[in-house]
Length: 103
Image (cartoon, helix red, strand yellow):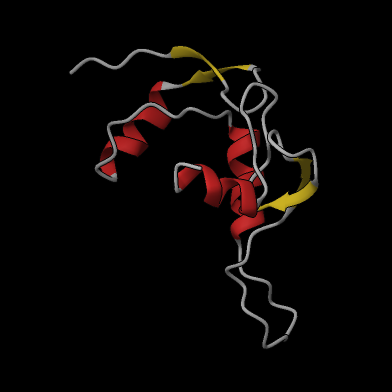
């Protein structure tokens, strides 16, 4: 299969980036044939956010950063473990549970 550089748009920041032939070959050598959705900068930021905290603390390191937002249903301030995007509704846990229960 002949590889060619591809110009892609980052799903996180919207920047254009090139998925080079070298990167494609590396991904394929690891068995990954998918196309990255995020630019190298956003991928690095995500890796750093998910990296274990080596501070010596006994606290769990798997907890992700929390983001403050407003519930789209009740208007209360809430925190979620993902960065909200403007085009997606985000709910507090109470409203989310009520929606899932069909109320």
